[in-house]
Image 1 (cartoon, rainbow, N blue to C red):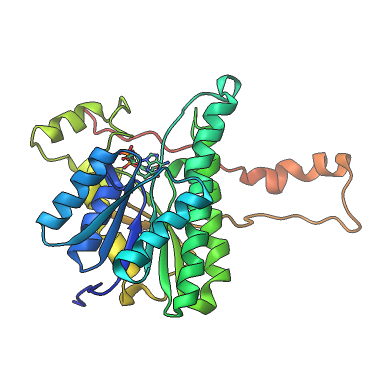
Image 2 (image 1 turned 45 degrees about the horizontal axis):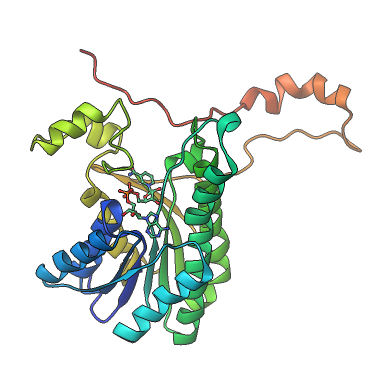
Length: 305
Ligand SMILES: NC(=O)c1ccc[n+]([C@@H]2O[C@H](COP(=O)([O-])OP(=O)(O)OC[C@H]3O[C@@H](n4cnc5c(N)ncnc54)[C@H](O)[C@@H]3O)[C@@H](O)[C@H]2O)c1
């Protein structure tokens, strides 16, 4: 077994005061990386630094809302000031403002796009500038979502941001390949403040909080578990063992790690000289129209009672 050693490397993890980000920060620190913990909530950021330090790791807190160039530069500068460098960025900070399209306000839309999409863009850009200057490669780990891969009822803003983030990973993996900077989107699923309100999972999360293990149909079937279950992927992607892994969308949760396919053409039909609406209508049902794709995140498959 190769042993993952990130000693001497410095990381920024946005939104790492709680939930998945906190688990990523702990996992990076446990494998030797020094971590800038970021959150908008000062109390949880400070508590995260304390718990990482008490576990023998190295961490500092930078409390700032990601979403602006200024915040991104503060985070990169903090890593450089404290640790002399930046090797790993995890753009994890996120919020939800769920509503169906016809009820979604501009504020709901802008808040989610700013935090997720612009937060990821600005932080990754600042990190890429620094990593290219260092000339020693680096790791950008972006955070997608099943909602961004598949669409999700009530999540116009979030699904668009997360789909955009998966597109960032594909695009930046090409742009940053020569600098030996890998860029992947991880697609986590875990019990956190963000998901514990999902009604179907609520009783299981409640039982888990009372010390009961999650059943196999959730851990394996749904790929759903704790934030810590998702965290192993982050030090792995930051390590030498994953240098060849870039431009991917990688699912993680519970007992499962999965690779998502990228969008690609699955059917095509041709008309010499081009199409008219009538010729399209004619061949549609027996050609590409026979391959229409499903949308949405499949409903959980609960075991039969
Ligand atoms: N929980 C899941 O199953 C799941 C599934 C798919 C994707 N994700 C994604 O994973 C990430 C973490 O989710 P989570 O479930 O741990 O959420 P969470 O709500 O438990 O934690 C998110 C953290 O980000 C912080 N934050 C919010 N806005 C911020 C900002 N502008 N700047 C800095 N910090 C900010 C919050 O204060 C909070 O501590 C998000 O990007 C989320 O979309 C989560």
